[in-house]
Amino acid sequence: MPAVVPWQGVAVKSDIRKLLTSGKIKLVPDLSDTSVDFRDYPEKMLAAVDAVLEGRLDDPITEVEYNGRRLKYLPVNELLDLSKMFLTTLPQNQRIQTIFCRWR
Image (tube, rainbow, N blue to C red; front, top):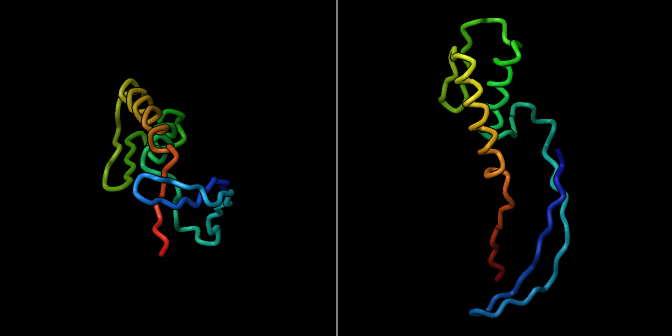
């Protein structure tokens, strides 16, 4: 899941901005650390809801917990509503973020 992201070096003095340099950087996770789940909360919960809907979990009374929240046995219509809700929150969590750095 490497990602190539653009970066820019900008000099700012009061309200004057000057682009100094720019480029792209490839971000690669440390795959030797298998204990880290890089998915965020909506992605994890969407996977849990999908597993229940697809019948991939053996226990009919299902209980899954992520970040202190639990998903227990729910009717199919409630699971579908949860799935829609988590699908709508995914794009908000995957927006491009700006990181500001000060150089001295």
